[in-house]
Structures are given as structure tokens and as C-alpha cells.
Length: 140
Length: 289
Image (tube, rainbow over all chains, first blue to last red; front, side, top):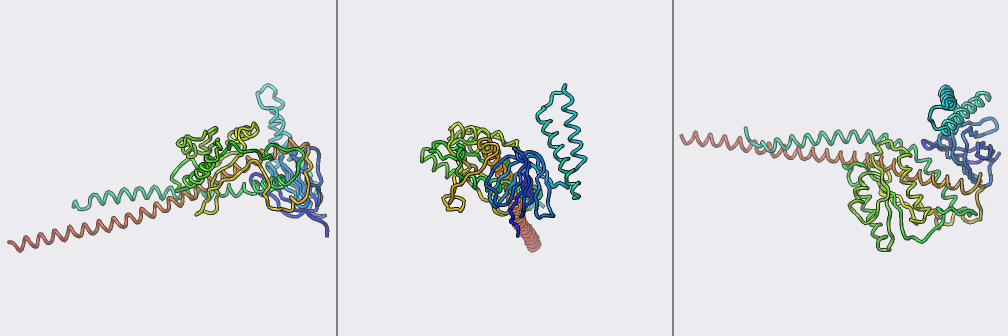
């Protein structure tokens, strides 16, 4: 029997995933993390990106998160996402639109907008699309 | 016929009141469903962050965040979550009674109190009390409160805690048990100290790995924690308010119904008595002729 770790993914709105997994991948602030069971305790912030929960060697669930916190205890991994979406629920059109909008704002230097937030939005939209892309390639 | 005119108008006015309370009951019922959903939706997050914080309290970090260090208590900060409007039974008064008991204890111990209020009722209560200082207030958040709405008062409290102006932070709000029961709760948020219970986590010496560094992550996490607990208190209090209002209005409608029944009975009796009297007068008159 392979070792498993309990994974909880919750967003501010709801519980997204709860169950056992062989491995979890998360976009930590200092780089992507791969978490196996009995990992040392760790706390870190997460960047926008894809969280992948590998339930078995053949099955894994991708989620998109727009940032959050990650806590690791040897037998429990908790991800507090700001918002989390199952990858197959990402609305591609909406993501594309958001990307276009953010790019437009960034290009238009004359308008008085918050560049930091526009940049953040653009980053989120790109990460959403990338998650979706990867999800498609795997034939999800 | 002039008999029981007053009673009839009285019945009419009670019927009108009953219509209002019934309408309010139905509005509260539908709002309760929505607020309850919202409350249940955000519960997992605040539960999970609570668990993480509990773990954190057991850890032995090299970097001691001020939120994790116990200080001698001279002044306490309280965030009081109440409803904006009344007509919701004893919801707010139960909460304030519980709080008042605590305030008296603290007063005896010579501890001063700073208060931030959420909701008009709490503000009114403390404005009348006059003993403690209200240093922050927010109200009229509606049925869909946003985190942004309460960040201000939380910041006031956290800054005061950082600066050492307050040594403990408590939050007072109603906990939703079910539609019929709401519990007033008083919870200590800061400082975060482990329970004395001998958990398996406390038995060994360990610490987290922090990425990128302890201060940044802990600052972020602890602020998030406080925000999420207060926000949860707020949405829960909202659900409580609607539930309490629904129950209060239901009993008001029922009481109005009973009152109408009794008045109707009195009215009928009076009417009958008047008729009987009239008949006997006529009979007596006829006999006299």
C-alpha cells in the first residue's frame, strides 16, 4: 500500500477538496512544491497557479487557486485558497477576457489605474489559462 | 348598532399588526435561508485556519510573533458584533447581558476596556454605558457583508495590540446552533496560547519551516486568522438575527391570533347581551301596556 496524506483545500466560499492523496503539488511563493506524505511541517504563502492533487498513479485533480496559504503537517496538508476552482470549471472565455482587459489597462499608460492590481489580474488570468491548458493536454 | 365599537376597532388594529408581523416573519424566513447558506459556506475556511493556528500555538518557533506571547493584562480590546435592527427577540440583549457580566469582572480586576462595535445596536449599547471607550464602529453592512467592511476595525485593534495598548483581544457574537437556538459567545482571539491539554503535538519539540521567512508568513497568516474569525462571527450573527427575528415574529403573529380570538369572544358576548336586553325591554314594555 502506498502512503497517503490527507489533503484539505478550502476557499473563503466553500470546501473544495477533502481526501487522501499520494502527492500534492502547489505553487509556493519560493517555487513549486511537491509534497509527499510525512513531509516536515511547513507554512508558506501560495502564488496564483495550479494545485494538483495526485490521488493515485493514474488519477489526479487539478485546481486553480488565486493565491493563499499552505500548511503542512506530517499527515495533513491544508490549503487555504483565496479562491479555488476545479480546473475543468475554469471558464476559458472569462479568463481570456480578463487577460485582454488587464493587458489593455497596462498598455494604456495615460489612464489613471492601479498598475499593481492590473498586473496581478493579468498574472491570475494567465495562470488560469495555463492550468486549463495543462488540464487539456493530459486529456482531462 | 353601537355595541362593542371599541372592541371592533381594537380587533381591526390587531389584525393589521398581525399582517405586518406575518410579512416580517416571511421575509426573515427567506433571508435566513440565504444568510445561513453564506454562513455554512464560509465555515470550513475559518475552521481550517483555526486548526492551523492551533498547531502553530503548539510549535516552538524561533521567531516569537507578538500575537503568540502572553502579556500581563491591563487593557482589553473587544470586538462586539450585533445586528443593525431590533425586533429580533432577545438576541442582542442576551449578548449584551453576557458581555456585561464579563465587563463587571474586568472592572473589578481593574482592567480597562476598548471596544470596536459592528452593528448599530452594539454602538447604542456602549454609547449608553459610557464606561468604556468605543474606538471603532461600523454598521449598515447589509445581508451580504464583505470582508473589506470590517478590515478597518480589525486593523484598529491589531495596531493597538502591536503597540501594546491592549493586551488581549476578544470577540463577542452570536453563534448559530439552529433556527431556535442562538448562543451568545465570547471568544479570546489574542494572544494565541495552546490549551493546557496534553495534545500529541505538544509532547515533542518542533517548528515549522517558513517560506520565505517566519515574520512575513506569520504576519499574513495571523491577520488572515483574525479577519476570518471576525468575518465568520459577522455572517453567523446575520443568520442568527434572521432566525431570531423569524421566531419572534412568528410568536407575535400567534399572540395576535390568540388576542383576536379572545376579543371576538368578548365582542360576541357583549352583542348577545345587548340583544337580550333589548328583547327583554320590548317584552317588558309590551307587558306594561
